[in-house]
Image (cartoon, rainbow over all chains, first blue to last red; front, side, top):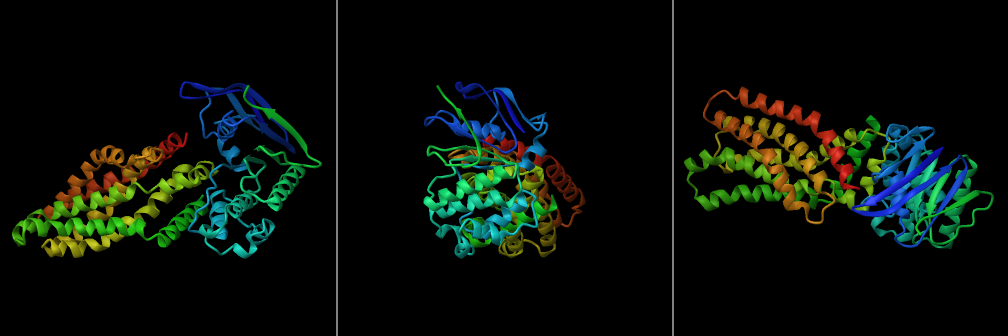
Length: 203
Length: 222
């Protein structure tokens, strides 16, 4: 599905990484390894076309970006360091707005909120939620649109043991349905029954 | 596409409703700046009447500029802007929804309050409808043009002053035709030409600004 060839990204004069390539097929999970500052987030942002490539090509289902950007964006979802949650809105309002932005309707928001364990917080302002609960809202956002590719930057940040199990279950479920996941983490995830590959970034 | 437009408009209106400072501050600024003139110049009705169109228009322009800085700021800070850029919907349409929501919470209250301030400034009653029309079209244009500057400076730590330097020169044509239409109306002349030109500037901004804002946002998030 996703094919990256010979990617290089520069920040100013500084080369973050170069000559990086991989292929991600349907149902595959790719974990990015690397020390702090090795360029994991940079790679994820470049894959989302949020950063310009110095060289190399990214192809989605056989057609190169940015030409195929419209189709790519409708089939991928990015969950970054910043949560993209509005503190003045409730989790439900955040999810409804997020889903509409992705053009997905007829989704069962209540079921998704229950799935991530926020049923009793759904109507509260996100300002009053803890960091882990806010992270759960971002997990819920993944479920509000039926996208093939998940790009997750440190999905475990501030999650407790149950939250961690939830992330693992969501990734396994998504992969079993034929979806793909790229994620970075410093803590190993146990993804039973998944085709997990890993890619090391940096020297 | 329409769904995403309305959803974003609704979300931004809801946010503005819950954070009143965003739209109250520019409005209070507008009122205070205009009322400073009678206090500073003295209550001479003739003098106030002469400068009323210019004062009202400059104050409205500065209040719009003051509000512009926050247009994309909170979305940039909390990462919502990235999600906006990655939406499968056309970005130009989405930014148009944001600009419209921004105008509804900052520009529209300004417009509704302007007749009251026109009375404070001793403006002739016949010129008030023209003031309203010129401010309606004019502030919409200012919001669209100013949003380009707001998008370009959103990634900077102290973008406020730079934003003013970037967009104030672009505001000049709108100010010229806006205030001259009110001056003409107050003097009893025809105002068609000025209002048509304001309308033309608005249509130009409506067509050209959204792609420019979208491109500027993509640069700012790099």
